[in-house]
Length: 233
Image: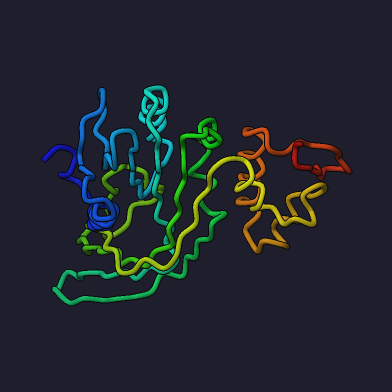
């Protein structure tokens, strides 16, 4: 089948889940030069992307210019177990300490911010629990995408969906503005977001960068090295 050879269990399961919501939906449909994950109806496309949303940029632009409605489904990993098959054949299961929140996705949005306020685009974020499967290697190796800073003695083989926990949808300006606490929308800095939202500083800075690019907020004051922002009317 087209475009499924390297498909993870996570991606395949979500694709089946969303297809089954509409009995007339079709999967792996060629639209122009691209293959759509799901054609929900004549003019609605669902794209499921488990990582690297920026890679969808040209695809999204083509769909929107072709007057399609686009739903991007992004699974946000809230709980992750790691299942490692060791060299002796034994299995070791551990829980990843890494925790993601809705604000963790903004690093993924830096490449597609220009489409996020399009009236025909919906960003659906679903919180999931997954198991990441790994195989131990005799020597330290690079990963398939060649992105490791340091080689490790294991390779990832799959990501399996265990449970869908909850979800939220971002569509048009009001939904994005709601992600800023209402009482500070007219005057806030990076530190305010870190404190109020309980997120990392780099996440707050990326959040602000994306919102400035989307013309949702503007810098209104600078005190020393601290910049303050307000939502744009």
